[in-house]
Length: 233
Image 1 (spheres, rainbow, N blue to C red):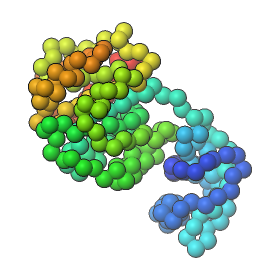
Image 2 (cartoon, rainbow, N blue to C red; image 1 turned 30 degrees about the vertical axis):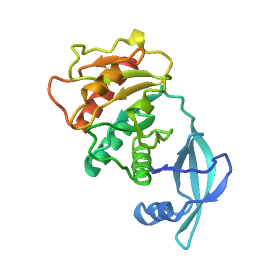
Image 3 (cartoon, rainbow, N blue to C red; image 1 turned 90 degrees about the vertical axis):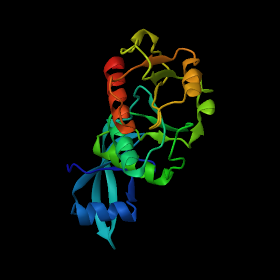
Image 4 (cartoon, rainbow, N blue to C red; image 1 turned 180 degrees about the vertical axis):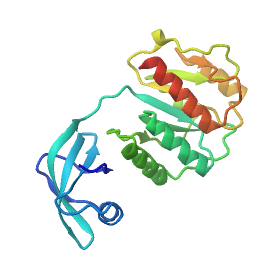
């Protein structure tokens, strides 16, 4: 069994025979040099499956599903609400947050947000690559950018607010319910005072100071998610 894991968007089932797309076929046959009769794994929300290469014709890999390796996952929902940032840092942030278990990304346009558009197709590619690398099965979702007001209308979440002004540095696990846990990270210029007031009015919100230092957005994301994972798992 090779260590190649690929996300497969179509349905997977035992004895399925199908083909990889051109890009994945190239990766398997030309980059990783997997040969006929060798195996790799495919995954999606249904689980992870062993695939045997039947043939490689005109650079397209034909495979057969021979075994289910893992059942589908039902992880605790962990959401990240964040301000888009510059591309290189943004890709790094998305990659690391995926590795750390985020299940949904919610871009928010704050008053001080500098980057106000995202390349959703590119972000989805980064998410899939990080999911493949980190041995996850469920691929995180990414929503379209929205306003803070729109975001706060969703009451179906436990909100963790990373607030520089807070004196609290611990998460109260008694306030964590079966709802998705969502951490909200501010833009590079921090939340405006009005935004801070709006977030603090959210029912059940927990403000927390994650560090005495002022962190870059991508560092704050990694720090906050690590703290939350430790607290709730």
